[in-house]
Image (cartoon, rainbow, N blue to C red; front, side):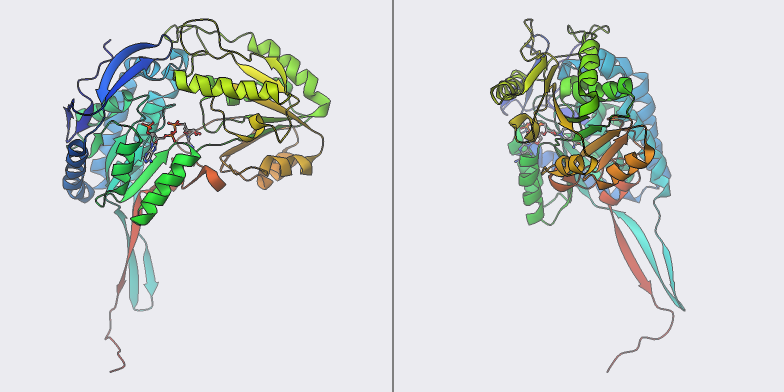
Length: 483
Ligand code: NDP
């Protein structure tokens, strides 16, 4: 397959090139090879995308939900039919193992298109009787939405933002991370092959400055960002100055609490999924693993044994289950955190270094005896680094778990379901798990509290964030007035 896209941008139903923008090399993280080149959007390209979206949106919103939904569901089927090809592209874009991308990326995007395609026809208002008079409400589209993506799930993020936006009658301009620019172009291409009218799903490439131009443009009504907290604060502030709607899906440093009555095998499995899937580059990861003192050594022993099952190598080989970091830069960031963990006195149980092979591989790393003040317990690392902390008191662990600016996810492993619900109820997090970790079905709301974000993606909740309500008072009698 060729990884070089037809052109850098997809605007008004067609690929568009403009080589006067800054060149962006696309690098395969498993080898460091340049596998494609795209160009950052110039002001003229950004303007073209905004004009196309603005021109197409109103007619799209006037179509029935059934008609809009049919197109989204057709795109979902096409994505499933082409899952293998799209998964290979996702692996080239991100370096994630094909074993993972075959089941977690295009398929998750297809789920979103199918789900919101199905919901599109159900978006209705209310009738509110007021005696003889009444009020009715209409759920209306917002207009032009901008989606800005992170690099860890480029296909999924393009669909998670595009599907609800389009279902509600909006147009979308999506800017992928410059690290992973390839997959969103395929999503745009497939949506249009499925019958989406031109101009409704546009992709423009670029760095943060392109995202910022879009966010600041008065033609834009809504911004949905998946990214880090510092970027989220900037984008939220820029959107606020134009009074735009926002969804912010930001970072986390989520707690995973393992009680001494937990099934250790399942708890270890949850901790592996919550720290090493996608080589740890998952926002909702449970990277602060609080393990009850009574089972700490048993937990660490079993975890170390199971880590031997990590197969590193060419992520296109389906036997490989652990890939490289997305970029050399991200690898550098992760290695710095590992160095801090060692320097601040955490006990290294596994990994702890770059792997001596081609590509940006960092070994799955586990630190034990981590304390709350250590940098690796406080900051989001976004790599395969698990911090294991001890506890022996329920209330104390809840307080420590909540002592962070983040609030994306939280997990609890225990056989005592009363305790599970009590602890989850007390944790400050948006997406939580009991005896599991990191499940993200489209049916469930996804998003954070505190600095981890605003709004929710997926589920019926997302509809609130891509539409607005008009209310209409209807008077049946005469109008009374003071004079
Ligand atoms: P960044 O915050 O660096 O970037 C996110 C996106 O925003 C990129 O497309 C980036 O462009 C763009 N951007 C940067 N600056 C601006 C700006 N001033 N205005 C508009 N857009 C801008 O995040 P990463 O790409 O490094 O992704 C990792 C982060 O994403 C982690 O913190 C992680 O937790 C979070 N994340 C959150 C998820 C969630 O759903 N809660 C899911 C996945 C990741 P460019 O990259 O081209 O500079």
